[in-house]
View 1 (tube, rainbow, N blue to C red):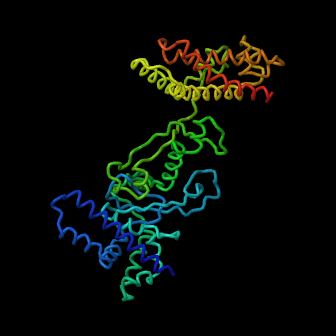
View 2: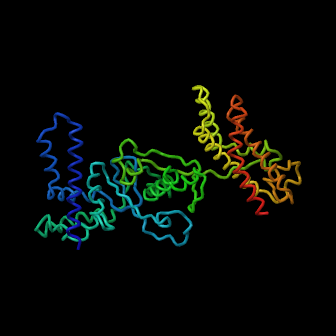
View 3: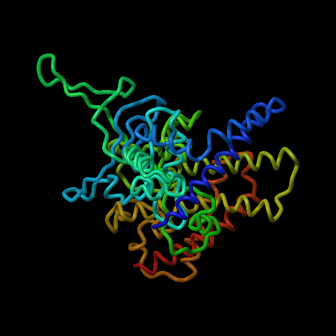
Length: 424
């Protein structure tokens, strides 16, 4: 048994908590902090008194649950649940089970019991269990605290209640839904959120947006990476008890009191199903939320340069170049979208210029010379560079800026064009 390790974890938790309490009290009371305050802190955390406090209040917390009844109030006594039903019939549905979520949550009926949840949820080093799991298993884990078996068994039994299924119950503060089933009779439903699943979503989105994500760094530097680039389109973020994390659950506190939501809108019908006939129509498709934001960033940067009468040195040129590269990515994305959306040869029905056809419908170009290929790439790049200048403002349509756009875009489009040709 890990009696020594478990006891060391109890002492470690109490040391950390005492140090934190002393620090907080000193900051709060400043010169009024006395030895009496210090003595009280040590007295409250004397190990036997602390175990009595934990045991007496263990039933007020729910450990290793996946669904928390309510995250928005500090005194909600509705039941918290753990999803233990294996999803076999609909494995494609996203649930706590199918998402393979290892991290479960800890909830409590009132914020005053947060220290109990914090103690029982304290991870024991070099094990896969929390303190509470050990203490609920066997009374021998208390052997270094008390010699009296009846007291140790009492502590064990009471702490085990934190892991036992609670009686089904709702609460006046839970947002309930009443469904009429007959006259004056109703089913009462209290929506219970999967805090564990919400936390998994939060971690994945946060990781995908992290500047330190190796894939994001590789994309920014325009180099290859064996990983998969993941982007979530416009998730909404709802702040839940953000001002006071202890009013919720452990995982809710970790994710800063917030929940991510995905759009649930149905697909929008598009009336304009015709492919682009010219560069203007094609580039209009490339102007979306992301590219508009990049245009704004370029415009703001150029405004500062002009206001401060600064020249475009190598460093500033590279900064502008990074912005332009992200626009090139959107242009390529639209080309691939068009390639997948329309059948080969669609450009035969329209008077599409050869350089544009070479990118949007390359099967119709046929055998052409190396010089013609270069001309197509250059003309296409010229149109995109001109479009960028127009979108950052007429006053910035200088020859120098167009040359910068062109110098960064041309190698990208040239390499992409070679890929298109190789696939034909």
